[in-house]
Length: 143
Image 1 (cartoon, rainbow, N blue to C red):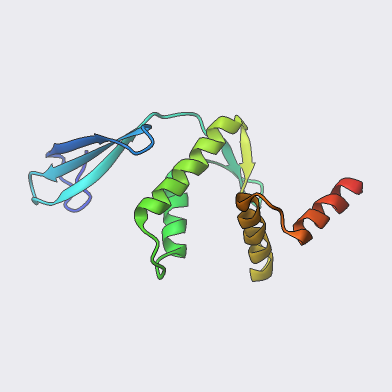
Image 2: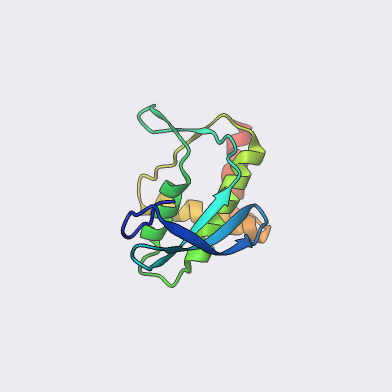
C-alpha cells in the first residue's frame, strides 16, 4: 500500500479492526519512510451497476466520486466523515441488493427541484409522504 503523504511503499499495519457493518476491515498503517499514519479499508469487490450520464456515456460506479461529492457538499457543515462513509456504504448496499445493471445519474434543474426531492426523501424516511408528493404520484399513475 502506497503512503498517501510521501508515496513510499514501505509501511506496516499497526491496528486492524472489523468495520461497523461487518463488511469491511479497517487498517491503521504506519509509514516507515515519513512516520505518518493513515487508514485503509478492505472490502469485498462486488459488481456494481454502470452509471448512465446525462449525455448517454456509461461509466463504472465509483465509490470515491460519491464520497468526494458529499464531502464537498458538506465541507462547511458539521457532518462527520463517518456519517458520509456510512451513507455511501448504504448507497452501495442498495445498489448491490437491487441487482440493476445500470443506474442514471441525477441532475437538478434548479434549487427548488432539489429541495422538492430532498423533502420527498425526508418524508419517505419518516414513513409518511408529503401531501404534494402523494398527489403527484397519484396523478402520474392516473395518466
